[in-house]
Length: 196
Image (cartoon, rainbow, N blue to C red; front, top):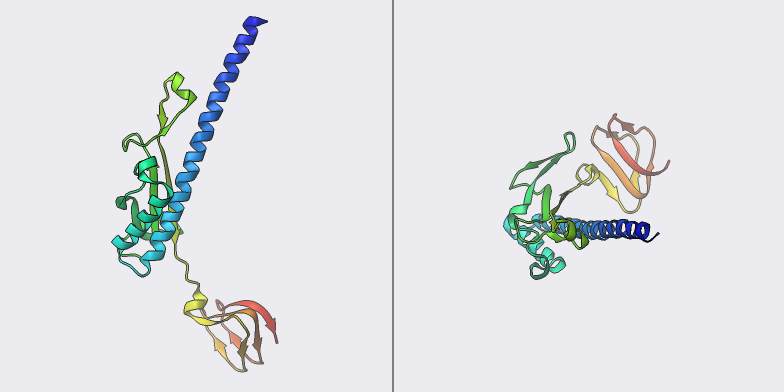
């Protein structure tokens, strides 16, 4: 029984070590992902009114508050922030430094940057640390209604004999009121409750 107990103890110690290190690794990855998300959001938000370098600096300031370099090492540099466009059809990011439409941010804790995630009990089997990296892509979304259409918090009131073409949008957060003989070409968008 003593020998069997030693085997059970060794197996439990190994499983506990794996559980502790995997939990630490998942926690570190989650922290990097949240930081990447915050940096991407800040960079894209600031890019709307700033040049690319200033927007990147604003994102880096957010990262310094969330994961200070003194504690975590450098997890994000300006070179890890890329502006461009997101191609929804191919699910790929297209780099364009002048774009204000999308941004991709990569945060990382790597051996090569001297800030990997340190293992706890796995060190006893030779695994000293882990490389962890995350990506975040943020895009802007400007609904068609804000560019081509009538948008209202309250009522949109349309009278008779109007024609609406493809791409035109009617949107109300309460309802749209219409009279007779309005023509809607296929492709016209409307989002609301109707009261005729």
